[in-house]
Image (cartoon, rainbow, N blue to C red; front, side):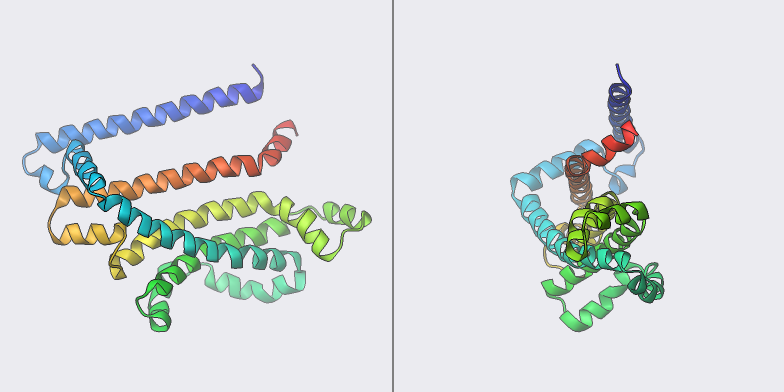
Length: 264
């Protein structure tokens, strides 16, 4: 068995161990919730939460509100990508533009995305544009910064070789810069997707009449604790599925990059 085969086996064992650990935690949760009197009010048994999730799914409540959340998430995420990737590539490629924009980027980098919410409210009110803008703003920064870092990390020898073969301007950006910076950009896209989900739930908790965040608030107000946890569990499942889907796409997109590093 070669190194790549051994790595695959180890990866599978690690995943299996991770699932076993989750099952142990769930079993401990169930036992503690049933063993300690009054504890179940604050943390219901996991089986009770699953029953509540099943009822909410069969009634159509969970699918409907999940689609609302995903719709806002993907719209904001797509807007962030459409602006951040081209802008980050240009900033990273142009040294003068990078030096001009660097102070602004460093100033805005640490600002939490939720801090933009009051400003978005002033411009857009409470409609869907505000929610999409907040999500897009949060996704924008990790994607932009990773795109910039990806372009700036490209070896100068690659640029010199490309110029020898006649690449200039758009040809250089499209055929050389974007593919070489892709691993960094994909890392930014993955982080941006996670932030988009967090912000989608956040804006729904505070402003929305629909979505999983809205369900959490509504059931909390009604003191229906199993339904609150069921809604939170659905958010966690969405996060897991979105990340798994992204990893599958990423593996196909940058397989050449990983193979080159394994053989190198």
